[in-house]
Structure formats: C-alpha cells, structure tokens
Length: 425
Image (tube, rainbow, N blue to C red; front, top):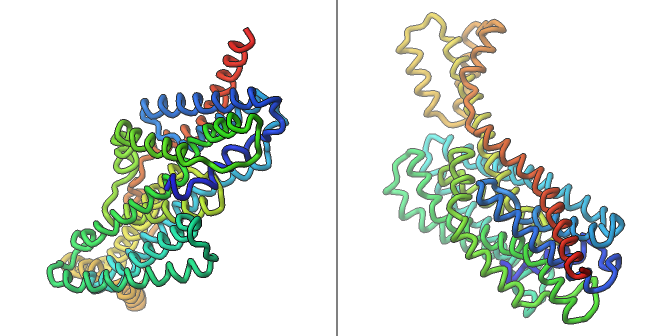
C-alpha cells in the first residue's frame, strides 16, 4: 500500500499543511521537517509505550504544523487545509462506526436472525466477499496500476464489478460444499467469516500502508526533495526509496509494538468475534481507501477504532431492545403459567425477524396492553442496559486523540528552536 498508493497522501503532508514559500530559505525548511520527523517519532513511541493508541497521522500533521509555525510564523500554516483535515478526523471515525454498524446489522438481520442461518449464510456471505473483491480490485486498478495502465473511474468500477461477481460465485460454490457440515447456530456461521476476515485484514493492511506509512515519511520526502533541488518546492514526485523506508519501518514497528495495540483494539474496548471483526475491517478499509483516493490524510487508527465503537454500541442497542421485548412478552402473559410463558419466549428467540414482529403484533392484538408504571419501565431499562463498550477505554482513547496534535506540535516547535539555536550558536 505504501509503495503503490501512498503518493497522493505524501504530497498533502509535505506541501499542503505549510506554505513552503513562507519558509525563509531551504535550510530552515530542512530544519523544520527534521524537527517534525523527530517530534512525531518521539510522541508516537512515548504514547505507544504507555499504552495510548494514538494516531500516526495526528502526530505527523501536528508536528509539521508546530515546526512550520515555529519556522515561518502563524501565516505559514494553511489553516483552510488544516480545517479540512481536522474535519476529516472528526468525520472519519463517525463514518467508520456507522459503516461497521451497518454491515453488522445487515449480517444479523439477513443471517443470524433467520430461522435457517446456514441457508441465509449461503445467500449472503458470497455477496459480502464479492463486495470486498469489488472494492479492492477497483482501487488497485485506479491507484496501483495507473503507472502502466491508464483507465477512467467507470472502467475501473466495471472491471472491479466483474472481479467481485466472479469471487462471489466461487465463494457460493465453496459454501455449498461446506453447508452440509454446518450446524444451525451462530458459532458455525461465525466460522464462515474466518477466511473473509483474513482477506479483509489484508485489504485493511494495504489501506494502512497507503496512509500511515505515507504520512510518516512525508517530512522525509520534503527533506530529500529540497536537498536534491537546492530550493523549497511546492510539489514533486516521491522517490520509491523513501516509501520503501516507510514500508520497512511499519513492519518493524508492528513486530515491536503490535501485540500491545492489537490487544487494546481487539479485546479491551468490546468483545469481538469473526463477524464483528470482519465488519470493522471492511469499514476501516473502505473508508481509508476512499480517503487515500481523495488525498485526505485521515487516520486509519481512528477509523478502525470508530468501527469498534460502532459495533459495540450497536450490540448494546440491540441487547437493550431485545431485553425490553422479552419483558413486554412477560408483561402480556401476566398471570399465565410459567411453562407457557417460557415456551412462547423460546419460540420467539428462534423465530426470524419477520416472525418475531408478527408474534408481537398477534400478542398485542389478543391481550390487554401491558400496563407498566414509570418506575417499572425505568427498572426494566436499567436491567437490560448492559455496557458492552468499556467506557474507561473510550475515554482514554478520546483523551489521546485530543492531546496528540498539540503535544506533537509543541515538541516539534521546541526541537526546531533547538536546532536553530545549535546552528547559530
């Protein structure tokens, strides 16, 4: 991803945040970008060491902004560009959460809420895999092969659609042969998402390379271009060796710090299984890929975490709503035999979404409406309000998001003044 699709993002980081013309001389520009690199690296390593899942994008953009203001004053910053980037940081986790929640709700509604989950999975899982193949193929054609094969957006979408259809058909045949060995429960359906999850993770890794690596090496690309040209330039091509350095660096960072952050995202926020993780990966990958296509340095960390929160809060909402439905059933059966009530609840739990709605409508039609006092309804909400998203983890992550940009900017400004003082000592 860094080698194939990271160029547009590097251009934004390198020349979009700070106006190069506002920096007096190439030497100051090099000092500025050196300070940005050091500040971003220091803050990222410190935050990761203490277990705070901060964003590479936030750190680098904040560092470039801080060093740029120190080198050229407040007028050196392109505040309108920063405004757009800041807006994308707020919007991207929200979109990531909504898309992930939408994927999960769709899967639940058309698969796990059906009476015959195996048959429903045979119909739906190939569609999900086809959509994933379509997204990856289209993006790869537009961004990965554009140096050797120029095609317009519509043609790329058509080719991606063909790849998605073929992948979906192959997946349908594969599931047909496995269906006889599956039991009609959620655990078996979850197993069907193992391979798709691996594919989605690969797509997400590609997207991470196109954004996080590109953002990290943006200042280095600016330094290299200035040294080669002897002057500050607004735009230039990004050498492949710079992208290769970033790609190697992210691999080493994953080996050193990866397990800790994987635990934070994968288990410390909310409980994830294959279906939920697939939805998060697809949401993060699609959002990051679109952002890279537009040249926006959004944070893939924020998008993925937004997806985790979206899935967790959707689970809370569904569990609360389902609990209230069960309580309403018991209220309508007030005075009935306990076995009759439990038998109805069992049939209700096994029914599809449509059948559940019909059962509730029929129950309300033939019984006196349940009369629950305000206190009883409040108690009912309290019983079924189970927190499936850890609020402490959410607050910690939001605090890290708020602190990262000003912290990296302050460190970068201090490093710039230190370099400036050493050179002019």
